[in-house]
Length: 389
Image 1 (cartoon, one colour):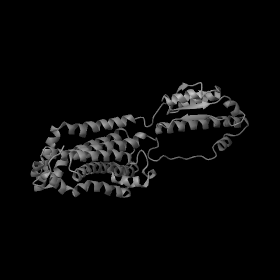
Image 2 (cartoon, rainbow, N blue to C red; image 1 turned 45 degrees about the horizontal axis):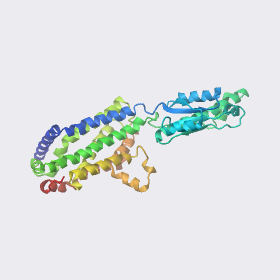
Image 3 (tube, one colour; image 1 turned 90 degrees about the vertical axis):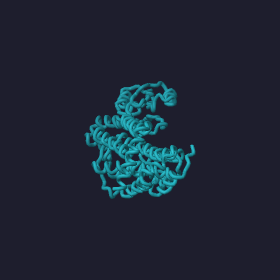
Image 4 (cartoon, helix red, strand yellow; image 1 turned 30 degrees about the horizontal axis):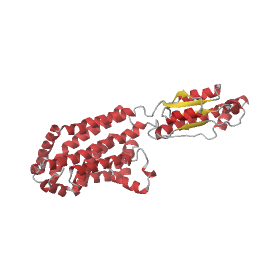
């Protein structure tokens, strides 16, 4: 009871500090809320739509115009301009007016009907990887559909049955299964890691900032006195209010994703709750550990900023970790967000049992317990260190 009373005393002191300092309100509530609604609304369509595409149609026949109409009907593409030459269309790509263009040379339809294999070209920019990939997919599909349509008409005229035509045009039928996210919704797998990554950034920074401010304003001795000189009690009391606020925001984000936006979540509510708690305690734990390694407000917050920014790149959502160099793959295990993302994929997204992600679970618990290694150093800093700007 003595320890619980001391934790409660320190927690009330910390709650008062959080209330008086507006920075905490912005970094713990306002900015995370803006982050949640910014990312989820930015990707609300699931995939980019109506990306500008150009056309160079020198054939100008019924067949070529039909291809262009089909291309314009695709979800990701929108025909915005027609160009008289390839050079002008290329200039439009260089000026960022369009992402791609389809080139249909003169005589394409004539060669198609004569089975002389005409060449239809398409050009796309990979300056933006996502836009370039979507344009390549649409342009390749429309080129394939064009040749298939002519082949179908020719074989129908020769008396082939629909089954024979299908066998010739598509000898192998592809049975594709996009597990869990069949819509290829970018919002599902990007927002669910970017938003927690930014929330972890605030957890890292605020944890180090809270301890640094005790040192800066020479409140460390008074803080420890309220905890009866027990640094563990002081840490638990100090970060209990912060953890509750962070957890509330994280749970609000999870509710918004899975109940309002209806993101797939095979793992159920228990997995989501466990992962949310691990996200908060591991993020706070790393921030405390960073300050304990270097008890300096400026240095610890710099390390936390660097670690949080790198963790978004090394989480594995935008670029697979397995495709990175071996040293980078090894380095990725040092970031809490990587383990959060893997545990999210295993337990929440795919609904596999928790034992399948036991390593990442242990890693997040280890990040939570990291402050234990530096408690003595933090206490010594509060009692003896002099703040240096």
